[in-house]
Length: 73
Image 1 (cartoon, rainbow, N blue to C red):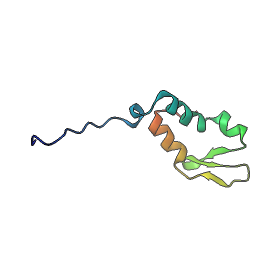
Image 2: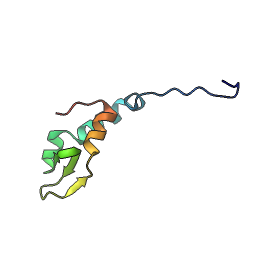
Image 3: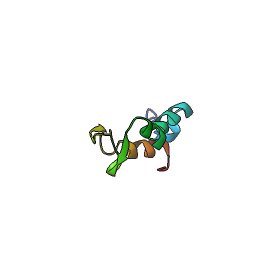
Image 4: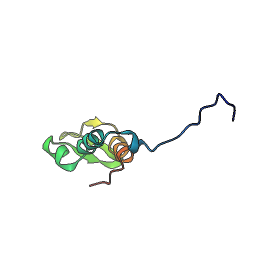
């Protein structure tokens, strides 16, 4: 390694978020939060409204779970 090189440390995304940020993201995909708005999570982590229209694209809920380390409720 050259003297000018700076070592790179990779941290899990979960460790880069404040507790309040993790909580906000987890809440945004919680069954209670979704239900209160008439939304639901369907296949592939897509969030849809009561008419079946996409609110958040496929992968949204699953990405939030990966980023926050949350389990599916």
